[in-house]
Amino acid sequence: MSQAPAQVVVVGSGFAGFFAARKLARILPRELAEVTMVSATDHLGYSPLLPEVAAGRLDPQRIAVPLHGSLGCSRILQGRVEDIDFESRKVRVACGEELSLPYDRLVLATGSVTREVATPGLSKFAFGLKTLAEGQFIHDHVLQQLQLADATTDPKVRRARLTFLVVGAGYTGMETAAQLQRMTQKQLSSFPRLSASDLRWLLVDLRPNVLPELGPRLGRYALRLLRRRGMDIRLGTSVTAMRPGEVKLSDGTVLPCRTVLWTAGVTPPPVVAQLGLPVRRGRLVVDEYLKLRDHVWAAGDSAAAIDPYDRDEMDYPPTAQHAQRQGMVIARNVAASLGVGTPTTYRHRDLGLVADLGGTRAVARPLGLPLTGLPAKVVTKGYHLGAIPYWANKLRVAADWLVNLVSRPTATQLGLVQESAAQLRSE
Image (cartoon, rainbow, N blue to C red; front, side, top):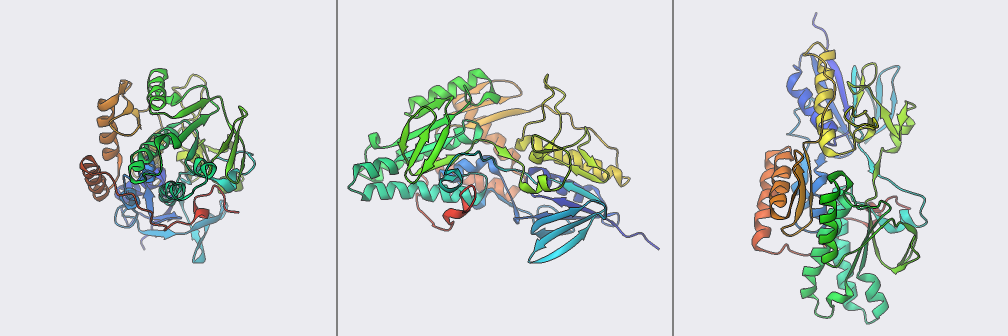
């Protein structure tokens, strides 16, 4: 009598979960194992290009990689994990109805959410940029502020509508601020009642530098470039309070402002803390094989794996690049536990980092080589096209980029996303 196939469950369709599930489906014979993906969405959002969605340079669907048709899994469940019973090896999933999903091997790749701090008004008045819905809402919201500023006769209201604050000078913050500032500057020609002097963009961060992962040289280049474009960048500065139409900064400045974009880091989702497993700085502690406990592995933003190349033995940073490669390693290790191949440890350096600053400008460090300007822009575009994990999405993104070379993106508000979907936490 033949043995029933092992049940392999992958939780999360971010980079780690997507690549783990896809590789498992490819290397494990169907008669040996059935791979089930559990995901809150039916797609992988290619998040590094979210700033382009917010700036209207890419349609959100261009970077939504479908799970059905691209993974090859035995089953894809769109739902939310409510609980995991490690003793009985069952995952409780809410997906229209409540299911108890048995597993023989489990991969936890729950990703991350925007990190919040105890700032009054933050959850009500700030918007995050982690999902396609948030990217589309921000695009519509910024355009709406231009429309409303053009309509008002009150100079104070106009000033508040045209003041935009981005919190966090990492990759997402720098790219979002740079690209949205360029979008609003270009759209001013459609609003003759508005002037360039009315438009105000600010970028604040508690750290003393920007893009620290790219090194001081490239960070200084990006800082100088954005300041030349007229952006007010304040380092060593934070937001201390948000009220309707007003933001207070730690340097004492009170800004009339209707738009705060919060990009100040990420943290694992609440379900991680509810598992009752060891964590380090909120992330699940795994070994060098990314193993969490017997028959369970974890990867990506929710896993704390020590980087042996770091002198201080810090964890690998929560980047898409590491999540993707950790997912591939986990797939090999899960397969090895079922008798296919041999296990491997996770040991990787960054292949290179890139940041798109809008127009023909970017900064990049491929294989440690610092690049700026147009060469960096070419490397940045090439990197993203290579990293998008589905050929149809690659073609559509490339087509949009080619059209953008000869035509300004259409600036329209679709109004498809409610404000509550973009707030850090709905109230």
